Picture 1 (tube, rainbow, N blue to C red):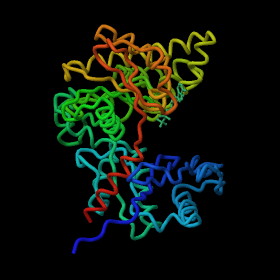
Picture 2 (picture 1 turned 135 degrees about the vertical axis):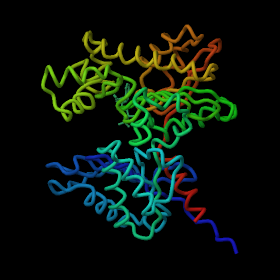
Picture 3 (picture 1 turned 90 degrees about the horizontal axis):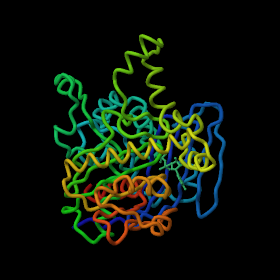
Length: 404
Ligand code: ADP
């Protein structure tokens, strides 16, 4: 006899960072968010958990230095208090690095944990946080299937020509040094939604999606598959980001170590935490703050914005090589979904491709509104598509549970 379909499709989605934990219970059928929240400053002096349930926002202070395990315990209590546990069918984990092992989401077992541990050597900060999240959730949600959804999986369709660095080949074969790409769940989701919006099959769609949040990446999508993306071995490569430099001359390492006596850790910190919009503006990593300052006449803020847009436009234009034909440029992420200023600048810089911005549509498509923001005459469409990585994680988890 076939097993009856589970009554609810509620999935607890966990996104575990080194000092934070984002969580949400999502109905995989609809994408509806039942509860959501953020535990932050984990392991520091003033950790806390804040969450939103039925429109109410609540803040819970944790004890000093409490970290992921305690945050997850608080989450379990919360879920039980609101009687949300009975309807959960799975826990879906966002895992940043899947290395070459994972081309799709998987049910977590010992072998999967081992492969995630191996991949974690490529992105230690993210990887160890993800593993911590998984083991804490396994302890707290015994009996619930745990699913891993990888940021890298969507990009596993890239060709060697796109993913290899021009380094000695054995660094790839022996140590896995190659470009992996990230934000895969988001690029996959917005591409699918854009195909629906434009009423064309995803298997025949060529898109470039620009995920612009604190981290930023661009992905070239050919006939629905990722063929190139701007992030690499780690999420540091590519575009100018909030605090990350993106592409730099690797010769900088030599200069910083020999001339300025930097350690490897200091260089890592400089490139990941002190560069990007923050480094150039010397003001903030937050795009809104930079836009306001630039409008008020701050020259460095204006320069940071110009560099952000110039590098983004250059990266997008370069993807015409693998794509040859482009149906739409997609903007998503906090900046992509909200900054009409950045979108307009980029579309204008790409005018030579026959792209033209519709000023009113560009203003309208903000704060969660999707829409086509190019003019009728524009040869290539520009689209704003809010991302929803949590829903993809919930959907993948629900689909895997169905097969158990
Ligand atoms: P994360 O990568 O952490 O998920 P988000 O996708 O939420 O980040 O994006 C955060 C970025 O979006 C910040 O730089 C923020 O300033 C920017 N942002 C949010 N709203 C606006 C807005 N109205 N105008 C310009 N930028 C915005």
